[in-house]
Length: 313
Image 1 (cartoon, rainbow, N blue to C red):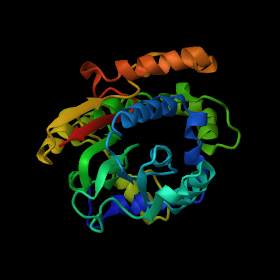
Image 2: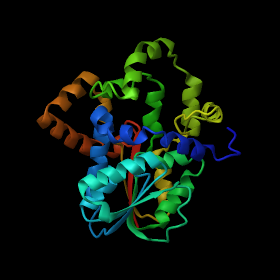
Image 3: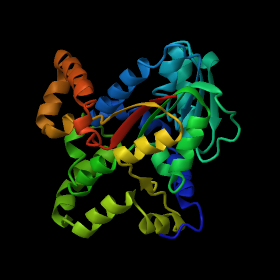
Image 4: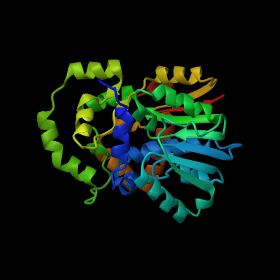
């Protein structure tokens, strides 16, 4: 794949700055069960890491799902994101939460963190895979996030083991639709295209092997779409668990814990997930069980599409 230009960053900038991104991304937990499960897991991991934390940097902070949570716990947060619509939405939500005085909002790309000094933040986090959208600079970006972290670094990145079943199942996302939102174009696209996706699907061994070998989702087709004026999904690098652990160890981290959020839930059919989510008691018990199951090292990497790591010096 030709990368004479920094196409991953250029595509990500255009994609995440689409005008509706702020509203759409802020409602993901109202729409998709897998987002509920993953974000519940990440929230619990985050809340266990706040001892002694006064300052935090949230890289790729989106609409503020975790930066606002940190501010509510008294942490001073730098909310950093490439998307102006999501920054604007995050500022709005932070105002509603009464935490604007503890937050700073910065638009920027993770590929350039030169404005921040070594160890500037007690805690650095980057959730929902923004590091994976920085290909081919993903290792450099992790190194920079580690550099500005004084105590802890928390990451969730795209998982190669978790993504490959997606590649072999064009209906993978459908069971996770929580509600039929008539104003959500992604949901409507899924509902209207189900039969066509099934009709045209063919198992492509060569494509699966390329994904396994190269760890890339996207490439020349996305570059062509970008050059034609489109805003395709960003080129995404997919990490293996041992690979991510080695990168963190090379950054000097000694204590590393990893998890695969969504691993248990992906074994259940959509009808069961829907029934669980409709009952508050079952839902709470289910999310608690998922959290513990998905932290087991034997399912590491098999989370729905994210791989989590917590690292301490």
